[in-house]
Length: 294
Image 1 (spheres, rainbow, N blue to C red):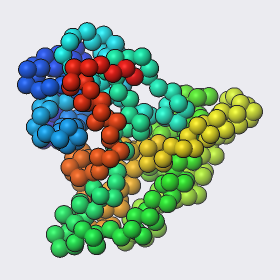
Image 2: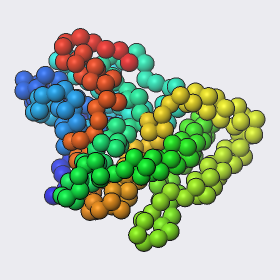
Image 3: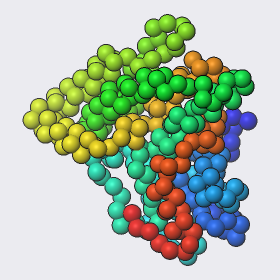
Image 4: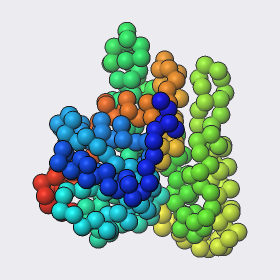
């Protein structure tokens, strides 16, 4: 069964699903993404440290639905409402004052799946003969990360600035394909620095034409300064950029083709949990019956 074949529920019906599992699990977890339950269950139960503890993660099909349900939730049963950081992360814009709402300190949950540990496990697993310590060298991983940590971070600073001055302008929606080039059949598609620079310039120019060079320069400087201490692996979209890049990288290393859902599920089994300490703390606070405030 493909993800498109999975039955969907109305928002009202989906919100009510928590009632069916309330006596079976210690917490209700509501998330944005459709068709995300399998990997969320794998990840959340690893974070909690008790496999099978959470039986149902409930997707509400969009950030606004999660926030709205959080605001209207009055039951005493423990519930955590989980939303992405998105481009707002680069501007310091956060949801504040909402009970049991946890906003990720990364662009999206997929950012936390992107790590050397998980990639190593998948390459070793696909091979069956390569030892983990030989699956991905530190030099390979460093070279893979280099354009992400510099060029893609700069691109997302431009995207976030455009979000401030011209919200309707297409930015992240251009997708990874717009900045990739396949130079050789063996190497697969790779990031094209010239295309990244051209896209950043195009977005910048559109904004300048709309709001003027002075305001654009001012806002770009603000976002650049605010995001200077943010890690690139937190601010570049995991779903639309990082995981597709990792997929290309692992195919070159011998991993077969897989759907995005399959990749996410496998990464959730092996990813490092160190960057998820904040989410772990939030889960345990709410499970204990206490409240947290965003």
